[in-house]
Image (cartoon, rainbow, N blue to C red):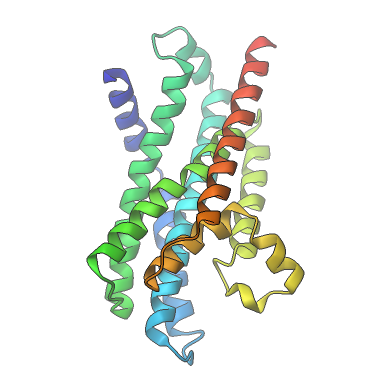
Length: 245
């Protein structure tokens, strides 16, 4: 536990020093939020609900991107620089290394959630009950493990350029089709049918339901659990194969 704690703290410090995190995980979601609630879609029928709705979209967008891109690419970089080989000759196990990466990234996510929630309050005066703020934040933290495990899967790639390209495509596709940028009902029916099975839609739909006073659908939870397990199994399998080779 002590080793896990210190390694998680080290991963947090490294992430905070990364300007990529500050730009993509904090600045871009806040800018998008301001533009889509104060410049575009200013004539919506229920402005207060739209401000809350899009706040949750941008918060999940930030956390998902940080999980897929920051974590995945960082792990590939560590592999290419020989850091992973160095770890193998230390008491730090592979499981502890992966878990510390995910814990450290989750702590980063907590900061992102607080900052973006505060931005929603400042920019549009978003007003939710204390329980809605807390439950939405908890949902986002727990649901992000589906994307953290996807990040560890991307982290099994051998080249940084490949990981960068794949993670960008996955991130943008999941955000767009999952309804984080625009309402799902504005998309073609066939695309809506696909979106309902994606982890991104089931991730963001939880907070959408919470701000409306509802409980997240059990289907959202099951799909997120399924993808978490799937990505974890694939990541573990590929890492073991790479160790044998």
